[in-house]
Image (cartoon, rainbow, N blue to C red):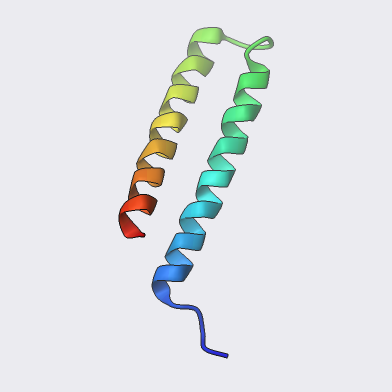
Length: 62
């Protein structure tokens, strides 16, 4: 069996990172009722921007 290609590995890494970030966003949203709304909103927006950038990069590489 041939070893995975670097592009395939990179795609897997990006998809894994996207999954991690989406879980983090969900966790932060759950914390909204327990902590500073303003601080968490900033963090959510930062992570959503990172997710969007990673998704764009993933789609460009396909």
